[in-house]
Length: 582
Image (tube, rainbow, N blue to C red; front, side, top):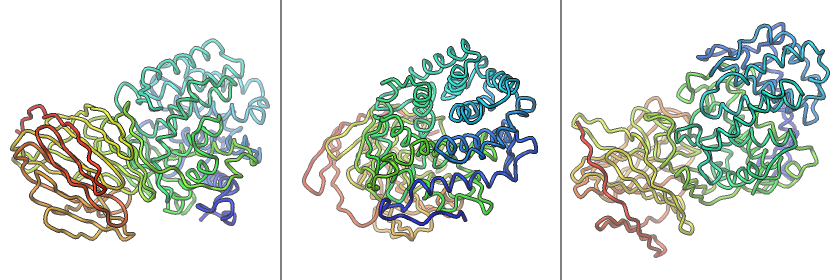
């Protein structure tokens, strides 16, 4: 669909992409939205559903303006800013006002950041009355309350720009201080922030919680060690959430932002706060961008619609509107790195593989090359959300709805299964090349242990409880069943195996006609049984090819795992609180 430069397999042996490909994609994304721009330039109203905030035209303007700003600040043609300059003249008269906890506050941050990036090209050239009106509009973000999560960084970004522009300075500097102070209490360790006063750990860490503080420091010339050190620590684990095919982790909200997931990788290189080599940074980032374009993320008109590869309603939230996907513009922060920067000139290198345990958020991230996955024993946005409640997520699978994948629950008398409920983290850690994470919820104590592609899932319930365990869902898969196990195989050879060890006596495959973001229908491996002694143990495998399985034994409160190479690990799993199934 897009016209792209020839691949360069010398400098980019893995993706073939160079800086010129990023520039070409940026230019064509901007060109594609032009037919949807209002005559006065103040709105870009794209086709598609209307968000709950009903300010989709402003969203389209602000988010594509940020893309244009990254392009121009990185040496692109200044003419790309012309339609946004017209919008600045008209916008303060027609944009929705910024009030407490309203979407225009979010978009004000993108406008402010864009103006800061291209200050010499645009802001300083505007007539003084226009600057005053735009500054007055943006300054309303300094005097209204944000949602109590990453939104605190939106008035902070506005404040950073206005302070740099020497206008509304006192209120601007106060907003920066308030925003950075508010997120401090949410820092959980290992480079990860909760997104508010809930245990919500997701992609907002990369494209918001780290990105804005680092850019505030970079653009103001005051980058301190705190945010740089945290970003470097974050990227050690985060880099493991991308697979070798460019897939990003399907977990959490706002997944329609897609390749915005690459923004923190480039930010680390920009402020020299990354554990990755330049070749690894470009390989992962270019892999993600190319992955989505190769999988049909763009419409025939070259627009970035709501969804995942293509339109996909379950990937959305009520606030998702027709232009929301253009937060993906943040990925083009990489263009701030000049053409001669090592990120653009070094030969691509494979991204890191391995395992990282994150005790603060109680997560494990694990990358075997073909698949990256997350074991979730601590992230939850709200109870019942399939984008957070599953025990595991990956770059190759998505959650199912009719029969929840990667779930364990007690079977009620009517045949329904209990939800996970509120997650109580029990920690996470590593033992050499093995990682584990544990949690509890109402009626279940859970432990996940992973080594290579093999995950041992250990649960304790009240003795005599009927239980159901599900595994990784695949789309268009064929099923092979043997006693006590289910094996699914996708057309590309990816397999999902679920093997009963203790407490399960029936194995079968369920189907979800709606499927996942990766296709429909989806097949889900299922185990059922009665945990007579309170133990429900299974082995789940997601990957390509066969692998030897460990032996798992339970005695008292201890689960002992003996691996094929003779290594033995023992874990204590306490019994759960009693739960009624009525």
